[in-house]
Length: 256
Ligand code: VGL
Ligand code: ZN
Image (cartoon, rainbow, N blue to C red; front, side, top):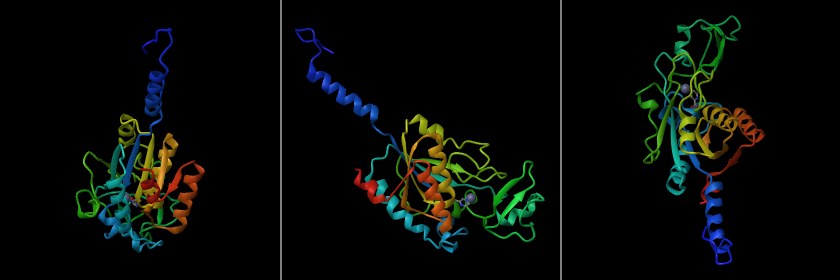
C-alpha cells in the first residue's frame, strides 16, 4: 500500500484491495457433473422407465441443457458407464465366475436386478443388471439430445471387468480412482452440482463420495431420474444426513 502524508495507509485503497481479495478468497469454484446420461439407460437395454420407479430418463436432458446454457460453471464433467463385454455386473455373465456359498441366489436361478455374492476372494456382493453400456457401442454413447460443452471432461467408469463402479470417484471396492478427484483438485473446485442417471445408483453413490471428500455437494433433483422409488428416498435422506443440499434446476438458475 502507498502511505499517506500522515504515514497511514490510504483508507480508500485499503477498502478496494480488501473487497477485491475477500471476493477472491471466498469465491466458490463450481463444478457441474452430469452422470451417465447414456442411451442404454434412457431407451436401451437398461431402460430405467421399465424399472420399478417407471421414470423417464430422457426428461433429465432438457433441464441439464438449460443449466449448461445459462450457468457459468467453472468446469463441466460428463461421466460414462463404460463396461467391457465380460463385465461382472451383466446377468448373462453370471456363469463366468464362481458364486460364494452365501449367495442368496444360485447362478442358474439368478435374474436381472437380483443380488448375488461372487466367491472372490474376498466374497463380493453384486447386483446383476442387463448387459448395458458396453464400450464403443450405441448404448454407451451419451444421449444425442444432450448438449456437450467445449472444454468439458469425460470420465469413464466401470472399465474393470471384475468390479462394478457406481460412484464416479471410485469403483465399488475402492481399488481404483477414476481421476475425477485429481481433476477437481487441479481446478480448485469447492462446490459440485450433480445430476443424471440413475438417481439411486450412480448419482447417489457419487454425491455420497463427494460429501465424504468434503465438497459442498448439491443434487439437482429434477435433472435426475432413478430405478426404485424407495431407494430414491433413501438416497435423498443420506444426502441430507451428510449435509448435502437438494435443489431444483430453477433454484440453480436463480443464482445466476
Ligand atoms: C448404473 C446400474 C448399472 C448407473 C450403472 O449409471 O446408475 N446403474 N450401472
Ligand atoms: Zn453399469
